Image 1 (spheres, one colour):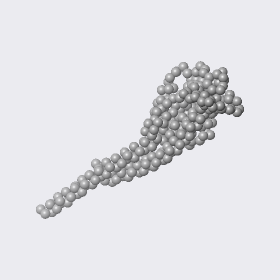
Image 2: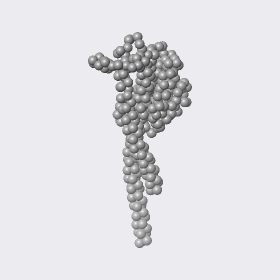
Image 3: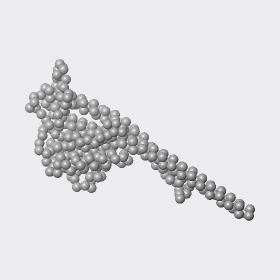
Image 4: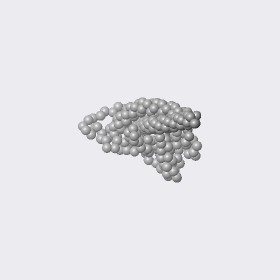
Length: 290
């Protein structure tokens, strides 16, 4: 049977852990708010880029295209995996690795090359046999637009240099604080941009382009791919902070339940000790009276 001292020691340990989980929840809440603001700005940026590309392609001949739109036989696939930098976020990283493993087992005739973003993915696949052609730790947690743009440019150069014939990205799509979904999106070759959107010139407006539309298109397409890459990383970061906030909130609530159980156990044990001591005093008094 646990002594009163043992129970009090356990209560102090749980309370100390609860303080940590509560602080981590508050930090995740602040980081989630910042990530949501950055994600909203990135979505707006991509919408404007997409509309510009639609306007450009409306005035260009159908023969004018961009190399990133081209299709070729896929011999090597580049897989960008966006995981978290730290744990304590439930099954967030485990689910990403599981999804990625299932993806890598598909099309065994194709060579798979990994570009890893986030320490958790790097730590896991470093022990596997897959070819890693790029790793970027601390990119998700310490958001840097310059670093993300450079990583995206490197990935595009791998496609242009035919080191890979296809580039896909696996990340966690943020739906709400309590809801997220792991998705796989093909970055290269580019699918049709602006599906469902109409050129603003079709509404009677006339848009002047300077320099020529084909030059602008060649400059915008790589930026659009970089924007898709950045959006995926930001969405995954947002989902990670939401998952950590929920996990730490659940841990804090669970600590409250454990403290309540230990308090009840402490009171019952204390009452049993007092009852035992009273019984011994009464027994002693009875023995002396005889």
